[in-house]
Image 1 (cartoon, rainbow, N blue to C red):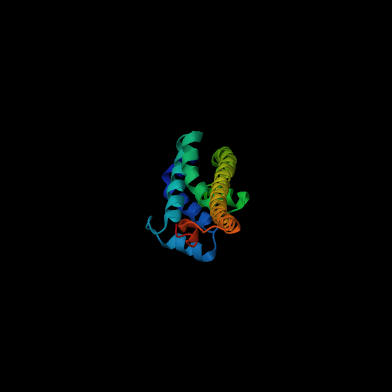
Image 2 (image 1 turned 120 degrees about the vertical axis):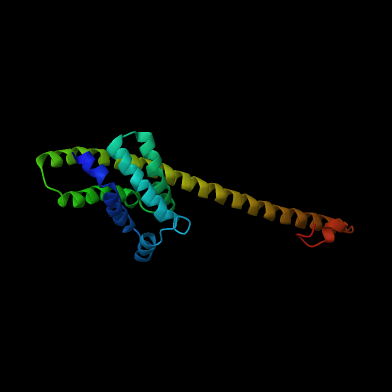
Length: 192
């Protein structure tokens, strides 16, 4: 009963969920995400809408962790590089519960529907745990990329400094020995 209702009304539920998810962003960003529908002008909004629909499909029609993880990953990668705290990065999944509850308020209440929703919430809770683990892995990758970039910059800076000091030492040695400087040492740094 519940699954049929969710599948039949997936578009409305996903719209509610996306709107709640967009509310986690600053006001201007939230307005932009809601207003601009072009996937090239608004890749974040597009990824959220696309992934939200896929997640609802997977929860309703078959809960395979790998396919669900793939749909989740699109949103989580975005939120990982946006420096959201872990709780804020995954809170959008709680909003799926809220979106479904809001939708179900408009339906004829029944004990069976309520019981099915409680079972469905367990799937969402498991999704939250999966999302948290995925977010932490994504953050780890982001930090690793930043550390690698910093190390490369540091190595390049040290290389430039060492070249400068090597040339300065060669010049000083030639001057100390009382000889003439070779042509390559008379050129200013950076011109060889």
